[in-house]
Length: 232
Image 1: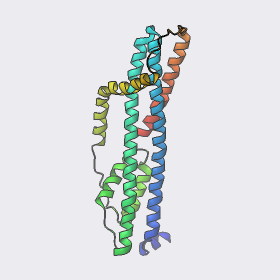
Image 2: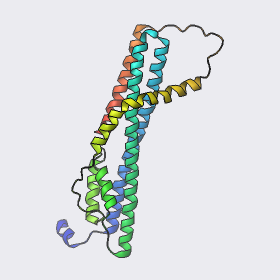
Image 3: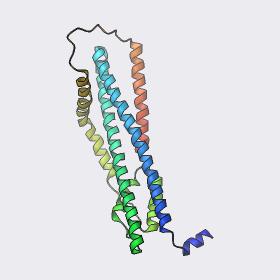
Image 4: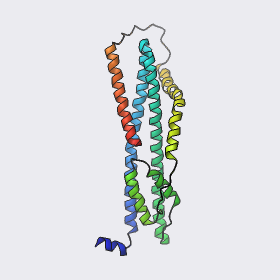
């Protein structure tokens, strides 16, 4: 009965607009949660860089290993920041889609018809490629096609994957810049060295150092898994 009714009764534009806006708001909330998680990962990675650098200064025998860890953590920080940038850009695109969709429905009220928007179709086609939004963005695209806001998408192949590969290749060149930013800031906060010699620090035991390294590696594994879940 409902299927027969749908064939003869035109959909309510207000109901269509409410459903589209509900889907968009749901996606924006999902992106907000993901951005918050990535920001926490960024802060933790910065702290790991500082901790490894301190260990290199305190224990000359561990300096080489600690410096390798510093650079690995810096590479991870670059990936974290790029993920955050992509999510922030996606949120801006989604907000733009919401504004254009509401404008399209407003024009429909005045003119009695709705025009397909190339801009909305392009943004939706980009956002539907995000793994974390794929399901709800497909549902949104179907609703927008029903309403006439966008035409049927043929799956434009935007060069997103190629762009991500190029960024990963460039990461090595940014490591020194990131380390300079983080470690220089730490040294400036510490200020000049005091003229009175400080008492010698007790040397950490090998077992304690191993525990610290295992804790840091476990933390990095957890962050990598979270980031991988956001990216794929």
